Structure formats: structure tokens, C-alpha cells
Amino acid sequence: MAIIKKFRIKSFKENKPFIRLEKISFSYGKRQILDNISFNINQGEILGMLGPNGVGKSTIFNLITGLIKPDFGSILFNETNVLDYPISERTTKFKIGYVPQYGGYFHDLTLMENLNAIAEILIKDNQERISKIDELIAKFELDSVVNIKAKFLSGGQKKKLVIALTLLGNPKILLLDECFAALDVLTIKMLQELIVNLQTESNISICICDHQARDLLSCVDVAVVLSNCKIIAKGTPSKLVKDKNARSAYFGDSFKFN
Image 1 (cartoon, rainbow, N blue to C red):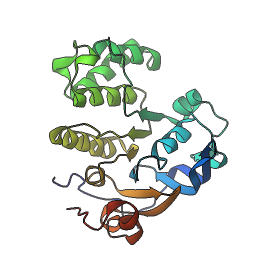
Image 2: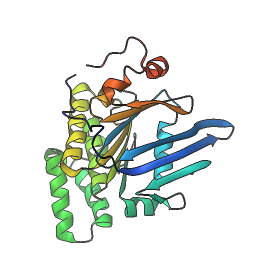
Image 3: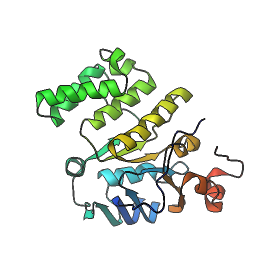
Image 4: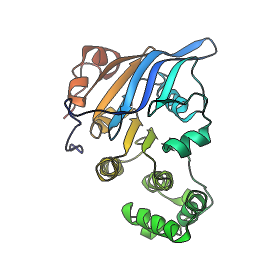
């Protein structure tokens, strides 16, 4: 697959953290999922998370959104510790957008009805609401399916719809959970271009977790690899695939990127 990302955030560029996870530990009962992990999602950066099943990638998203609380550690949004902030306040005050792996839309409503339902909650001015919906329909090229029930849309169209619903709230950071799963090659490329365009056009911070390593690495600035409850490697895609810890724990010796 062709390289989607035309540039990477350079090491000399000032990186201002939008979200910071500091010394986070979390367990489900006696099973430890995360053990003293720390990393930043910087403003305007696309960061990827890679690792085997059950390593804690979706758990990190649940911690950021407030669905669960860590056993230890801090989560900071723009230097504000948000551990005691409810989900709704994290979403509205700090503009957190979350695109789940499954669902995220009303199955029996049309695409337009889905957009209107969420827009009526988030955008009070009627003209502004209409303008925003029209903008997103045009951006994601959804004109031909606005009157189709969401459950009958293709996998790529459903993913576009959920991202559009999230963008109605003008998020400053977008969390994408397994966004490339069960999609064909052309749809994956379309999503990669969409993600990179969101960064370049709106300077949105984006965090992606996925098992499709090549697809993820094609559109991120930096990525982390999790294994055995820890972050074992972090870097640009080209550096990460050469890291011996990442190759041993996740990529394997035969993995090639570009």
C-alpha cells in the first residue's frame, strides 16, 4: 500500500501535550492490564497504539474517556487532572471525541436522521446545525446515502458516519478504536486519507489503536507498542519497526514496512 502520510512531526518541533497519562496502573480483579505506563498525546499529533489482544489498548481509551478509573496514576487534559471529571464533562469541556470499534450510531435511523439527532443536542443554532451537517456530508461524500438506514450502509460508510457524528461536537482530540477492522483495502486507504486530512485541515490530535500494523503506521506520526502491561517501544514508524523490543514482542522478524 502506498504511503499515506506525507510528513511526520519532527523531533525538533515543539510538542505540547494535550493528554498526559502518568504512571497509570489498572487491573481487572487479579489480572493486571497496565503497569505504571506514561505517555503523551500531543496537540496536532497522530499517535498509534499497537499490541497483542488483551494488552490494554481499548482499556486506555476507556480510561481517557472516563468509563473506568485507574488503580494508580493521573490523567491530565491540558495539565488538568481529570480523574474526578465525569464522562460528559470530559467530552464537553475538553472536546474529546470517541469512535468505537462497533456501533456508535442509531441502526434504524437514516444517515441524515442520525446526524440531525446528535446535532440537535450539540448545536443549538438551527442555521449553524444545518450548515455543519451539510459540510460533513460533503466532506465524507455521503450525499448518495443520506436517506439510507444506517444498518444498511457499507462498513466504510458506517465508519464515515460515526466519525461525522463525532465531529459534530468539534473535538480537539479523536480516539479511534480498531478503525480499520474488517474493511477492504480501498476503504482502509480512504479512511487513512480522511484521518490525515483531519489533522492537516483542523489540527486535531488523533489517537488510533488497531491490529492492522501496516495500515496504522502509514498514517501516524508516532506509535507505541504495548506488551506485558508495559509500553516497550515508542517512535516514528520507521524507527519503531527496527526496535528490537518491538520486533521481539509484536512485529516479528519477517515484518516489513514500505
